[in-house]
Image 1 (cartoon, rainbow, N blue to C red):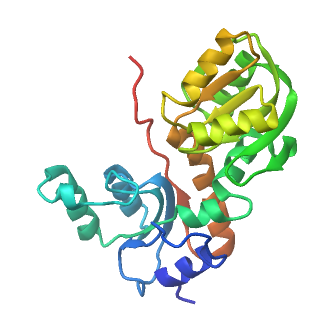
Image 2 (tube, helix red, strand yellow; image 1 turned 45 degrees about the vertical axis):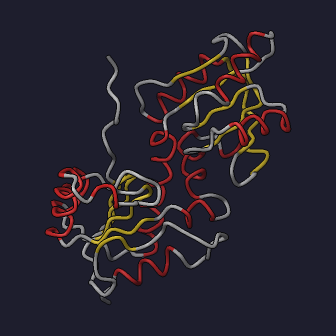
Length: 264
């Protein structure tokens, strides 16, 4: 049976969505194209597109926008050489690219969070699924032990943190992606009595400054910042396995990106 791009999209979006506007759409490609291979990735960089082509993939499922903004607004890029080189390579490769952000976050449970919990082997410690966050009760560990554990499980070089490395933690809040904003994270800390918050990223003048003052006041609080991609890559890797089960006749790959920042 020949499976078309639109067939894959139908399966990905079958559960529906809770929001009126969505960024999820087929950015490039013809929906009637027969799929030869699928790749999932956090963000379809030019390097990812080229690697996918080498694997005989013609459909990339990307979580984040490919042109440097959440809504992929390209008006300001119309005279930009970087934008046009990337766009031309995508079009010349005849690659289909489907943005899959809102649907996977709206799944119950959130598919990106599910992948992160599985990778950390913390699914069994989740006591509340609040859709935008998970509340965990883990075996007591110090902040330092948790950081070392996270780095090993996620295979990442570094994290940023605030707090006492020797502070013991048991009650933890986990938020993926750009959910480290004060209105989410600070509220979660108060409502759930959290000792430690772990998130992808957020404004540095919001939750981090709250944690700084809390630590200064002698309160048992700490924060670990993974990085946006680092918190969501496990979800897109999980998605590759999920798609492979749905379409066993099609080769499915997860293509990781190199860390975006280097450590000096």
